[in-house]
Length: 571
Image (cartoon, rainbow, N blue to C red; front, side):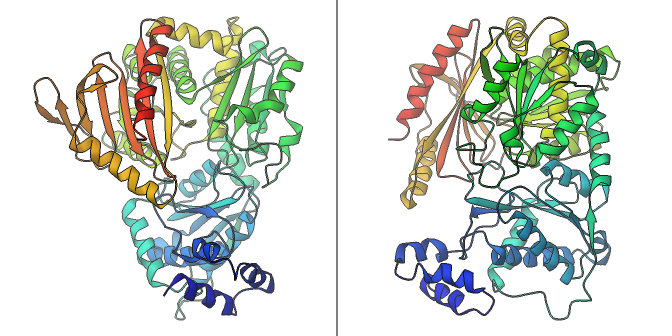
């Protein structure tokens, strides 16, 4: 069927409301718009679905949500009656239509005879991961588009371990979606609808108890509680309730919330982008922090799985900490705090992704921890944690990635801004008790472990020819692997597709532990790591520059030198 035929079929469908039909009628003379909405289905991958909202097969709407849920229900039913009985947890965020999409998903599952646990209101993403594990569910669905612009929504799917769906199950869902009519309901032979049970405060309490179980030095907070101040913003999202509550239970007396951004609003009226990675979103928080003389600012993204910090540099100015820097501070702090209270486990391990700072490895090594890398994404970090702990090889004390995601404890298998907010606040209070800001603490870590600097370059390649350009860039680098970059010799060429490592000088080949991802890495003679990978969700190639040196100036110079090379890759 052509996109035009699909458009006509939607227009004629009795399933659509008058309003939905009017939306499609309005574009009847706009061929380009019709094509963009109907040229294909939204692609279902391990992260589920994500797209702009509107009518059409290539849009997020109640029909595409039902369609995906029916396919997912069939995958669950194929697991057998025991698995089905365990049910599915369903959660949603603050975005427009999220509650409607979540209820639609719950209804489809119930109509397929699959019991549902549905949150009674919006909740943080990590609480869904927790609920799946806590109640022994077979799976979970979360309606969220994380930190994407307001026009987007998404549909994330989780499996029984509380991590995102494994690739084999995602492939099955995608295959069934291609076979199913988008307006098809449950199979006619399905049993009577299963119950939909609401989850609320009792689940919040269990989740908060676990989050606060990650506190190692409550005394550090009590010591400074009367004077220590912080500013918090949920960016109009799901962190608005549980994060201030968790901080209060930690013993914080002065958590000043940004009033305008405590308002739940899927249009995110006060920010251009509700992403804690973008410092400009913190402008309201900075004003309050300066006025109140706060020590630091903490912001969680709309679904409260990622968290960003800004720290007082000591002169009333506020500086953004990168995800790399925050993770290193937290790792070093947790090791120290666990040692102080005798709770550092045997065989302690830190986990990070391949694009996260090498400083984390140095911190781990100096403190007697092992540090392992995984591919980008928390499903890989969760998988590695499970594998290490099940085999008795190691106990993971922290997992993180450079894009503001942190996972602590064993009760979730996804990034968790609620627990991370508690740990970061405890850390900031501890340093305040030593007369230091988090900025002072970071500078002290550089003195102790050496200087590191990182930069992520986004080479945007939009349009249909963008995908072609991205593929050509990777193919070109593989056909002629560079032996020199920006005037510096390449020591090792690593290809994560086949796990191969080539020593440039000797030509000797070896294998890495990791393989199966379209990523290239170059270890340079000056100690810098350069990583090139196409984004899985956006039309861009990402280049990560991970530099280190004896001074900050040396690191910054290396980053600039390689950034010029990264720009040249655009062609």
